[in-house]
Image (cartoon, rainbow, N blue to C red; front, side, top):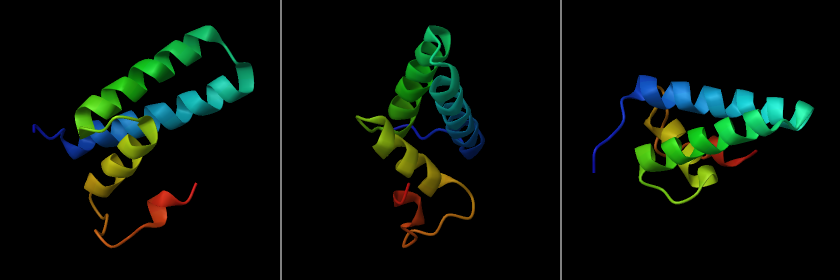
Length: 75
């Protein structure tokens, strides 16, 4: 499996989190569609099937993540 560069993963995670806030605040269709697109890209980039797993996988691949660190699992 190809692995996305950590910079790409960090950018996708940041985009998804920002879009989640925008969608929660405004509920706009444009924000929802972009959030779906970023979620799909995260899943493809991490080889996962859902956005929650993709976020965990992406965060574990970022610099400074420790394999035994499960802090990313608490949301």
